[in-house]
Length: 448
Image 1: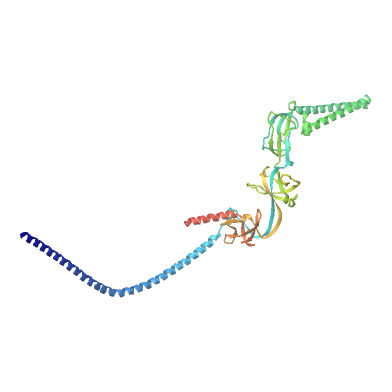
Image 2: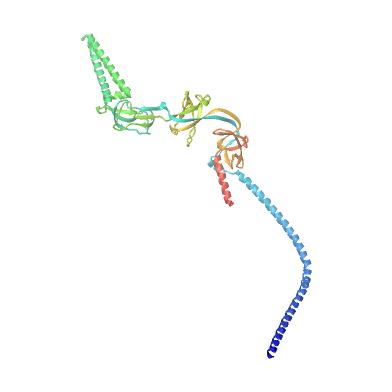
């Protein structure tokens, strides 16, 4: 019974506690709903009056913003115009290259006026530089002997009559001895003839003795003449012959090999102590102040080539072109090459035309008049376009041109340049280099 009462009391307590908690929760929710219902009305009332004020401010702000926007656009437009003007002026300034007189001189710039001209149609032929055979000599000793001294070497220059080598020759000793003996016999024969002539006139001696003396002197003179001619044939001068009677005996065998003319030793084949025969070539001397150019003329071009025609010879490699005259044109065409030989004499004072060089010869086939002709040195290439540099009062400006017919040195201008315009003929490449360098510097300065 007691246990049952305790259980009822416990359940009653739990029930009361649950009712209290539920009541508290209910009242809290009710308070929150009332607060939520009152709050919007208050916010709507508070927000109503400022709403008119805010619209007014908004309209004014829109007006001011539109005005400010118009002013900004106007300022930006003006700034843009100024920028365009600056860019236009800068573009104009970039097109014109300004140079001082000193800079033009430093770049080697030369200016000419565009004008008509005659374009030369040219023919080209291969060729080779040869030694002028008319000014080349094989130097031989003319008699056998032993080489005792060599005074000249390969490449040395020589003067006419200069001693190049000395040999010792027994043949020379015999020739000199014969000449010397002939001189003595002539002297004795003359003395005997004078004596016999004097005695015969006095009738002391017979006429036959006088005639024999006369015959002897004639024979002695013939022998002297023969000995003299032999020495002259060996290359000795009359002065040398006069000095023979006074020369000491130790130089009777001394033979000097001398230079035949001014020139240069281009070959040497002589050694100290060797025995030279009279037909051995000891030296080859050549005068290279002029050279020959042997040209190969093709069969199809023979009709355009003639003797006396002027040709321009080019070798490249830094050698300036030179002009010569055809003095010989062969009458036979080679079976092997099917070409004929044309030969040109070329001045070679500076020695730059060395025998053996391959060259190209150009001669004028015909001349064609063209409306505007300029040298190729004036033509340059910028960004893949042919152009020239036209000279204005303010400076130089590039001008694209269209090129027509050309030869090695000149070009016909079809369009882009007018007759009477001033343009750069020399120094165009240097001017182009200056423009390219300035452009690169400008791009580097703008951070491109």
